[in-house]
Image 1 (cartoon, helix red, strand yellow):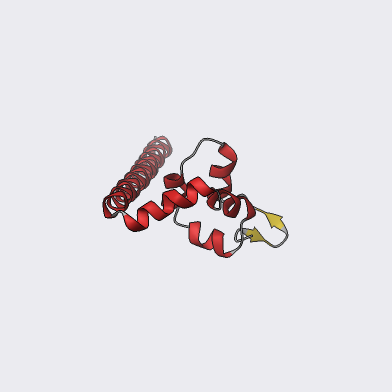
Image 2 (cartoon, rainbow, N blue to C red):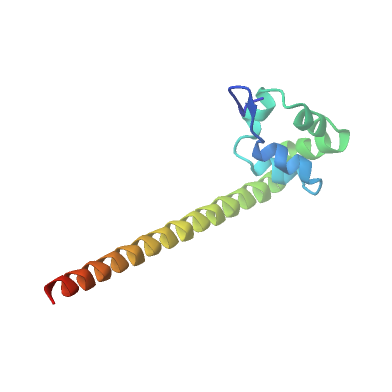
Length: 117
């Protein structure tokens, strides 16, 4: 599998989606590693994508530009949401680091004041 590392099996995001049981074709198509998983012959993914109704749905994306446009719009929204989450996490980390630096400075000032007294 694509995510295999030195004999240890790491569950890919695609496998997590497939195991959840409640997902759509679009959910899978929005995953950035879906092509790699297909190339690596992920059996569960191939089995899902081979189902007749799923094949028809994928064909509809090819022949209906509006359907593809809505999928691309959803993908764009999905990426923006991920970027927002990453930005929030980065902001929280920066704030935590700043608070820690302030605490260290305060403790250093208190230690210096105690040493001077």
